[in-house]
Length: 204
Ligand SMILES: C[S@@+](CC[C@H](N)C(=O)[O-])C[C@H]1O[C@@H](n2cnc3c(N)ncnc32)[C@H](O)[C@@H]1O
Image (cartoon, rainbow, N blue to C red; front, side, top):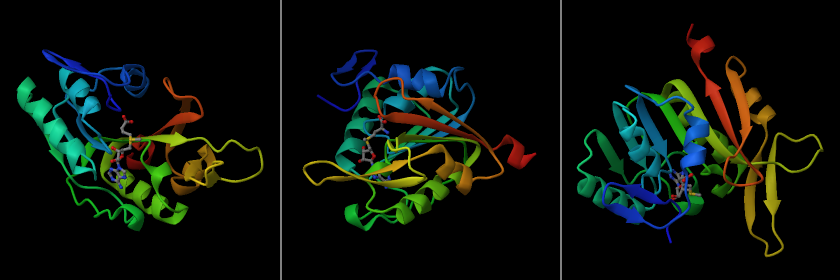
């Protein structure tokens, strides 16, 4: 069972259906847009955007086995204008990530990647890197900070001692004070949200 369900043409892979989340991110098809998916896993968002007329999609993921699977699917589907690369953003030492130096695109999405980072400083560095790669829109999937105390981001520890980073809207407002920022509850997972940062005003 994969993290993402894939059902395009003859390719069928069992996993969790990400379409409701995709539609939350793209209420309108990303027709003629270029997109970078950071932490693309086996490529679902790139394949879906391609079928909806995206001009070019680049998917990067630090886990090369996911990229191999994404490339196999791409070949079977004979989809053009999609590239998958075993690369990553940020400098998270815990998982040995290299910093991605790619071309700028219209839209960058980075869904549920940063709660795996070991500290807020490294996550903020990678989040800013994603932001700088986008011309129009950056979309982050985040784990919500569940407490009401004043905090913009923090570390959650579960009973087994596993740590995850959680974020809030003010965290993004502090990082990107000149942009229009929206937040929506995830369409598929509770305690998670989708943050959209529109760079239109910033670029105007
Ligand atoms: C929880 S999965 C989310 C997958 C996909 N974004 C989605 O929402 O369906 C996180 C993914 O991010 C990848 N990843 C972790 N750190 C990364 C980094 N620094 N840069 C790029 N990918 C990363 C992991 O290998 C994994 O595939």
